[in-house]
Image (tube, rainbow, N blue to C red; front, side, top):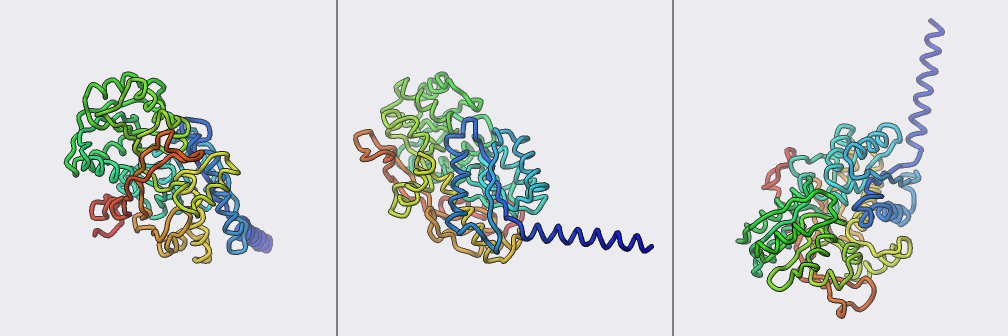
Length: 400
């Protein structure tokens, strides 16, 4: 009997010691994205570094504990991403996962985090279903979604006469959500869809898809894809002489895509982002620091990773704990003010409310310096860029 009591006491002591070490150890955040595939140049290691910049700017510690950033390549595969996330959450003590580019991976990671009551902050994932029918009380859609990318672009173009659209769409969850949300915005503005070509992701040769779009006579040829697929489609469009009455629109075209294409090929392309490095003095100062470390100017995805990590750390400090429920409450209560967003907020469904911007890519002669690629066409207010809660499929929110 005495031996059993001693053994129990020893086990309890060991458990308390282990718990104490966990509470005193580093706070770990995991940045999960594509390091080697079609989206590596628009995300990947540069977003991991953006997270580290946020930690450095915050001071490196919170609640007296060091903050560590770890990164991993999910290879654009949901099973690989889920396996990494599971190990991070169950074994490595990661308290929050950030970025999770590629919507199919994001859905898998969001479900794992929901089961474990852990926080996910999406920057690279785009499907608006992440705060819709698949929403979670422990996730935040930080940077953009398919609704925001299309609400401004489709509506503005339709009202300006670009009211017939042909979609070239990646055959995956992201492409489907992007075309769905663009179609809804287009029809609400009085436009119509005249055709669609679905393509595997990734695809190298877009000749047949572009020729079908050209033959449709649609005024707008909308690219519902991303990364190398977008660049290859734009190149094919230039090769086959898309111009004049047919305007090509990149529904998710980012600064590295334009840089890779060059202004000669990309000029005139319309796109929507929530951050531009050359927008103001604060953005330029941050971007020059980022460039010195990553040899490229940032766009909305790494800027969103930076802002999401910074806001998470502010919320941990305000909550006085890493408990997910308390931190999520603080994230919703605190206003978002960083290099990317002014007076933003996290809505109850996890959607970050901020303005978006419709840009047109400059001609080579209009660009005044390296990476000076965009002209501002329109500002899309936050309330227009986010799906109204009254239309949301998220099951736990209050209807408005």
